[in-house]
Figure 1: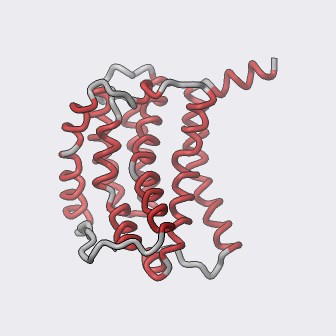
Figure 2: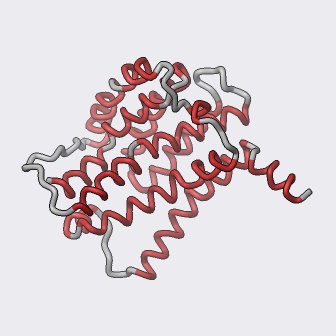
Figure 3: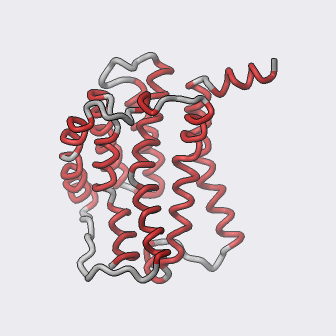
Length: 235
């Protein structure tokens, strides 16, 4: 009986969404506190990462734990098909073509809203160590496809809660984007508006094509922080 009760909760979209958001919010504070206690002299802001590129593993692992961990675990436990979250061949070309313009929109919004631009690497490409190459792959994965997967997964599960899967501007889409934007406002200020609008567009593309690969590719290309980390590790 207890096992059946646990299964009922684990398969419940409302439970999945709440647990994911709660972990994303409070896990951030937990990891921050642990870092302050265990590594009080370590600085992991942008200047600190430039001075010591090896520390990049900290934000990468934190991103994976806080963003992708719970959705991936729940997907595996419930044996959900990847197709259910848009990871499939069907309409992948259409999804990609529609998503690529969102990269330009992201750049334009970033400049108009924050006055910032993406600093692409300008020096010669080089790989100091194999470890830096692994960190680069980890950074691209964590802040690109995994982050997009996180948002789309929440849209899918939230739409299941509200039974709004067939609507384009669904309750699940709007609620997910609003919460994601608000949470980012605490750490990224006005840039949270850029992130929210971009993911609103990518979410609509996913809902139209039922394919999430295009949005994952687009977000990976657009994500400014990925280019920042690549610039440190490989240039």
